[in-house]
Image (cartoon, rainbow, N blue to C red; front, side, top):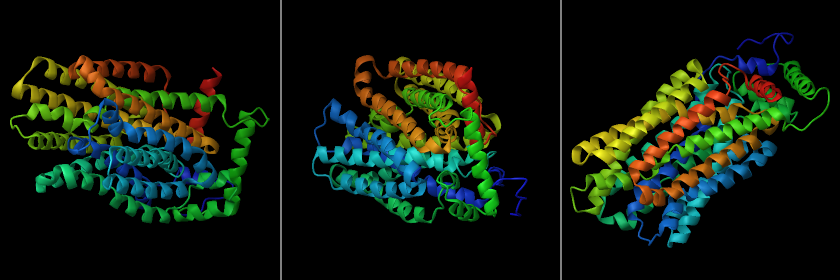
Length: 478
């Protein structure tokens, strides 16, 4: 790319206006390998759950499914200050190593408590990655394509979920006699392979230029930008540092203040509440518990294995729909914006949840299966298009560089705690009021989410990450 005049553009302005290249997509793919593992390691429990030979009470069952969420909340909180201190790249590499350890331990577990510990360990890596990946992408992405690049995180999650169920389907159908012995261990253990690939490839990623600038490592900023195909002079890099300092002085009224300003706190509340609605609206119930809740609809055979495989098969269909629908989020997030897409997504989820609930409550036999499958697939589609990726996008773009890691970590921890609450409560909730009424509750929560977004969430499409920080600061002063 031709050099810009030192007087015209500082280094970060060149970065924000850079045309999107194939290297940017490859770099985003490396950053979101953790998203794939996130999807794989949080969904494989749905396929393996029916075959784990341990005696599991309601608490152990809920924790086995949701234990990764507890570890994820802790991992996110730990990763926040560490990534702000040591950088985005080093933590992303460490995450992949933790994934490997957790996957292997789950595969060789000899007691239910060992398996629960392994799931918690995997959760630590999931949480750390969820706190870092989109923040890393937001710090190098061109401002007019940041949404599409950040959506890759959600797409990789959906691919991981789909691959997890496909792996389970192949294993269970080729070795049905080992379902309660070897099969479920393989389903868990194979997650170590993509983790090893991620560990190796992430060592080749450049560090975030914005984080390096925050640490006054100007020569490293220049090198990182060179890796991104942007050739700037040291004067341009230093000009970026001067502009950042001037902005801080303006925000502080010529005084030095904590980076946790009123605007940052407002942004954090907005992202956290969005994440809470993202989780409590129920998306992970069909994805985590899919084979378990759908198997009874396919009980034409007396075989538990056959019913479970049928449940996995239909969950594969839902997971494929999830992957395909996320494509539309890529196309429209930077065109329609965060508000319109997320409000439309929640509206579609509300209607779809009611369709699924009516199928469960009113119909029977083939009609029940058809209506429930239509409702669940639409539910997942609307989530994928408007809700799933939008949450991770605003998490990465809404905070200043100085506290982006810590703020994104707090938001990710809230996300995972909300995930844990819903998934842990689901078995008891379903037993108390029935699956149909559970989905009716999800529909109501989607309506509350629409009201929140319409009232409080600002539109941030086509703004640089620095301009987004200003938007929240201005709203905090009103």
